[in-house]
Image (cartoon, rainbow, N blue to C red; front, side, top):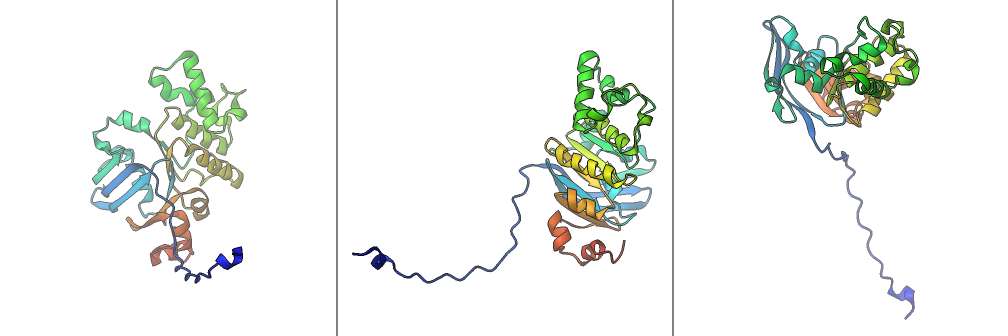
Length: 274
């Protein structure tokens, strides 16, 4: 029998309805926030927010000024404790442990913070990075190696390796911000919080910071507050939209910017307000 006689026509099945499939979520949740409200006196700046931040991903918080995103970010390592009459309700879990049960110095070591404006200490480049390590008792060769490692992780080593004992104030704005990141990285934090880290930087320095964040997420969980929507769309794996202290929407960044579920989100990212 000829081979072609064995071929029996089979009806072509109907194509399934197209659907959007999301990639598998991160294997582990690094931070879980449950019903978080943040107060300054009687003013509720963050209102009953619940969300998760996955490990080794970049999560961005966006929204108009005064929407509570920076207050939310700073609650993740208890920065609110430095503000008079500030308090929280709800819970924040780091690897399943309520952060209020973690000794504060240990928490700040595990959850580092970089602020909007670069804030180098009035010390040398080396001493800026070494500051926290010295408090932990590091010295000698071990200290020098840790400083170099941190500067390399912050993509600054090649620019400053021959000037480590010059003042940090001699650096450019972008370099000072990367120095602030190196100082935060020196203690090997599990989480790095960044509050508008590029707002005062030029486009070239901003691009370098964004490139750095992509490299760092291999070893660190990152949460960033930004007013720059293009920055969020370029850098973040997940994006949370805040409005008037409430979490309006949280999803993968490509969904937030391509097909948001809430009209408020669409109005904000398309420039109708904010």
